[in-house]
Image (tube, rainbow, N blue to C red):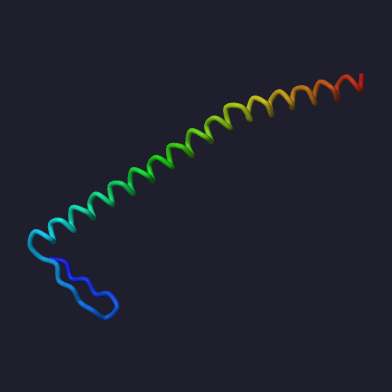
Length: 74
């Protein structure tokens, strides 16, 4: 049984309609969870791809900078 109060009016949902509302809420929650997981996996893959390219690039730039500084001194 669901009791819904909206704009001061109370509506009671029971019986097969309550089952239908409950099933709809479960489906909506599952869809929301799937969307959240999809976004989280997308964010994870994006961060992994960025790190896959950025970390080696920073290392190469550091080596080049160190090489150029040492060649100026010598």
